[in-house]
Length: 100
Image (cartoon, rainbow, N blue to C red):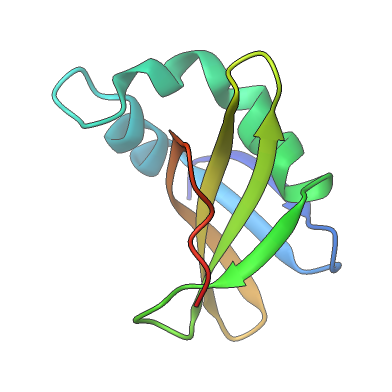
């Protein structure tokens, strides 16, 4: 598979981001095309995050949050886990952290 990166997160779980997912996230027709400038922040968010929250409607998904001071917003990176490996499903800036 074509990975942009594969790393171990703060909890030592393997997570990868595919080219397909990054294209989906940053496409001009997506809701978050501005994310094209945040690839390194997405990667760092998985390693040096502020909070991991289980997603409200899917226990196999986690939301990784990190506050970005310059933007005065949180970077949310959504990760889905299959077995012990995870993959990035979405990433965007938000003003609020949503807790389960």
